Amino acid sequence: MIFVLFGPGGAGKGTIADRLVDRVPDLWLSRSWTTRARRTGEREDAYVFVDRETFEANADADGFFEWAEYLGNLYGTPLPTPPAGADVLLEIDVQGAQQVRHRCPGATLILLKPPSRAVQEERLRARGDDEAHIAKRLAEGAEEVRIGMTIADAVVTNLDVLQATARVAGIVENCRSAASQGGGSSRGPTAAPAEPPAPHPDPREGS
Ligand code: 5GP
Image (cartoon, rainbow, N blue to C red; front, side, top):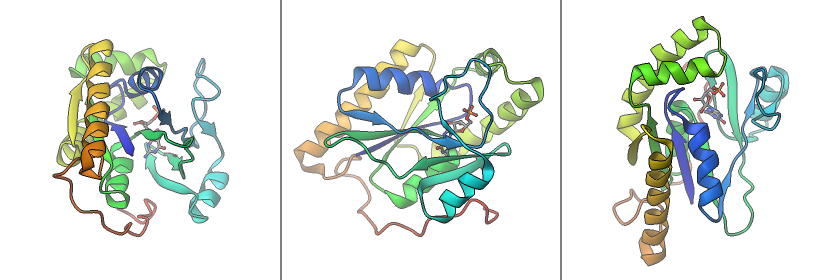
């Protein structure tokens, strides 16, 4: 099964994803590639940090499950390689979530929203991004939520990290039990029938 945690910057996706894999058994968090420079104090394994040429070569070789350009940097999920028996968790932006929806209609898309613009801004500022970048992310954020609401299977507001983690964990557990009762898809019996994967949309082609 594939679970996608997506939403605007400052929603707290990274924190919730880390807590989720600690708490939910057999859930494997994919590590993305990015062309963004590592932030001061950011973990070395937060991403696979690569240059643009390396990233584009991997995209051209169909090495990504999905990828997108976000505020001038490229981000991509490599083809997932979870341990046997584990489900996959992706922590990505809304463009990536749209691609996953096309490729895997049965994936469960969970939109994580910040509780308010003020909290979102505070969380973005705490990461040490410059003011211009924060302003761009806030402007993008409203549109990301608007699009996200049209594709999400579930929406969780991150007012409190413990509570939001528990809600997302509950969604994962419900999907697993629906599938084990014969739903056949992580989205349960009401899910759209599986289609063959759509051709991989290329974010460089002006979408
Ligand atoms: P940041 O630069 O703050 O780490 O991430 C910027 C945005 O890119 C966030 O919304 C984050 O979730 C998203 N992102 C991280 N990895 C991926 C990925 O592999 N694919 C896509 N589409 N977005 C990603």
